[in-house]
Image (cartoon, rainbow, N blue to C red; front, side, top):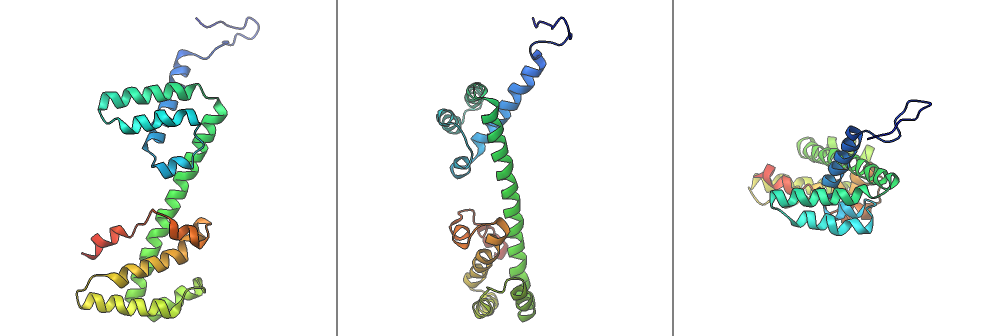
Length: 198
């Protein structure tokens, strides 16, 4: 039973309800960590002693065993101090915000590709106003080739290449990266373009 301060009347410890809410919050945080890819997890400041528990939870697929492993992970996470858990939460929030910005930017790249194919030199001029470092001749050639591929019902090689060129051009500025990081980014949304093209 919790004790009360005789002078103030306040409880010395947290209530059982408060402890339960905090435990469930840590469990939810553990579930988020287990759902991350290895690359995403590497960006989160997770203490070394938690990594084997996260890996084990990823490995286990049986429902009850997976829940049990998540509870075990959460138990170990509750032993960490509040600053460590807050740092993990902050990193996850920043990561999800970056992900949202990246997805929005990739949609913008797709929109620009469609504009280039639809409006030709007019759209290219607008693009060059916004991104003067773009290679006008390369884009003009790719647009011409993509239209020819479509007319002849050929594989969309130039269509995909336009996407890659635009992505390298636009993504770094949007995410605050340099061009090399954008090119090396494995999260390439162009796979979805194959479905759209078919």
